[in-house]
Image (cartoon, rainbow, N blue to C red; front, side):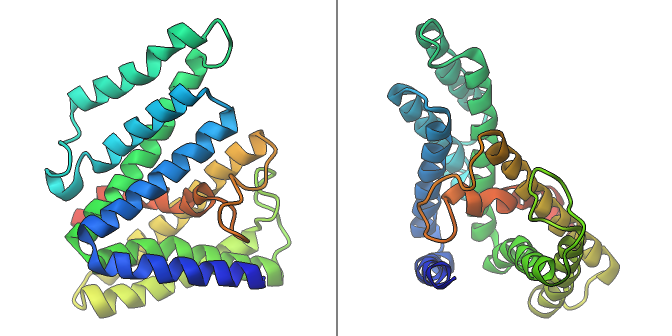
Length: 261
């Protein structure tokens, strides 16, 4: 627990100033996070070095394709998507015979790059749009997860799924209720005092649940490979992907409903 606390403190000391300043420094942080995530996934499947490099390039392209709406690279369009698809599919021709990189692997990487790349790209876009909205988006899954863990420890009895045997319905309920309540107070205090309260509660509730589904999705990947964490990069916390799971799913939905906030 002490190691976990120290790691969290160090991470916050690095991340909070970059979130506050935003712009290029924050975008660079997101790019580094993306590269670390790419390494964890490609290491998980033991891909050849060339495939790992191509994956990193494709992921960075997605992450920065919409930075500040138009700068750093270029807008995410059909040309970019076509280049990424070809970059991931063509190597199959050379590695298929050796069994090191198959068609199934290529499709896995396409899904991973789109999911993680778009989610991290949205981190940048939402931070540029409003730091209050960014904090709002990030705190929903973080608080939900924190209270779900505490609730599960205290009163958890009924397991949710074998995918993540430590998760309980009681914990999820506590996490969802407390996360929704606290973030509703945050929204009505710091973002919009005169708002449709019922609609905001509904949106926060949905984001809280989506975050938990994201956690379960990545838990399924770990269960499939019989691992506890994606890596040991962060002492007491696992890898980058272990921290991104619910945040990625929330970011994807947040971009869909942001016009209603």
